[in-house]
Image (cartoon, rainbow, N blue to C red):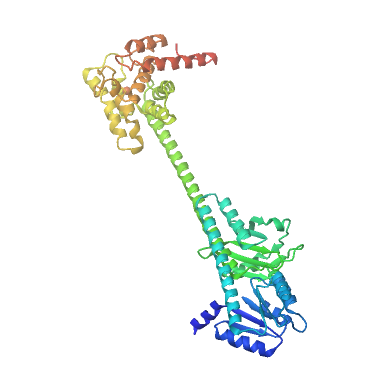
Length: 514
Ligand SMILES: [Fe+2]
């Protein structure tokens, strides 16, 4: 049964308009037998009413009828009804009348008395044309959706995607105005975010939508397709300057939540949105919803990344504070070494500034300077701060601090990159240092830089066993030991930067070590 119905639908709907009952009956019988769905009326007015009630593909109308004639009916149909073909039948068949009806837009004409096969042939040919036209429209719609989809996949910017979607509503849905309302997450209100207006409808006032009523309908997932006065009930303030012909409203849903509403307006006489166009709007609305959701997910991701970056920054700051805390704790017990690690860090930063290094590497050198003597936590430090020479045992104990520093830092993943500073700052360029006797470039840069900074500060600070040496003496000692104890290329780099620093201090009236 369903199959028969579908077959009838596929063959097409025909409206016969003729004042002669016998003609109506003959045409109805024969065309129904051919598989068409046929209705008949006896005059033009009834035909127009029937065409407004139901959709027909083809009207077969007599030319001469009481009241409205066939040509007038043709004219009225063309003004108000879309997508229907009109075939004129005339018993007064002259070429002139036929030409006139064709000029006015009739699809074809049939001369009375007709042969039924001719009528069937004309109707079939007309319906085939209608079918091809519909397919063409569907193809165009599919193409438009395809184009929008393509554009969406090539665009990450939400604004661009939404505008593409509204443009497609105008171009392919032949809407005059398209708007997109999005739910404001804080207030929960639906606010118009985007609007596109066709050139022909420029300055159109769209009125104010009754979003509560819209949501009642579309919130249940039911799209709205309404025409004329029926459409106006969805407005709290109807458009004042234009007569709304057709209105379509589709929810943008993400899972069960309505996150927005897509609206299409037609002010063009005779252009009501069709069911097919409504379906196309629904596809576009679902694209819009998916894009908005993706964009929101993307924004969430960006937010989360920025939270993570903040957490990382705060970890790094904590880390730095911890290093300084360690260094201070180490030095507090001894007046001779108080401030030593911070000064070594500063002198290391001077040397690093003279090299072309990334900022992160400079920072690493500064932190390594702060941490270089962390291994002294593990030795009997107070025993070493005494006037006079250290015994061989005391020297041996002192020399364990680089390796102890390595062992202290080793288990802490975030401190791995500082190990070289603590472990290698007593290695000498010529291989005579400790703990491993590394030579030249085999000594990590951190170790080579900290060694120079450490020695300069040790020489220019008071010690339990001697007073601070003058700057010039310390410089001469560094220069003398360049290539033996120290990296010969790093010594002049450090001394240049140190000179610059001291000149700046003098210019600013600051005290500098002699
Ligand atoms: Fe040391």
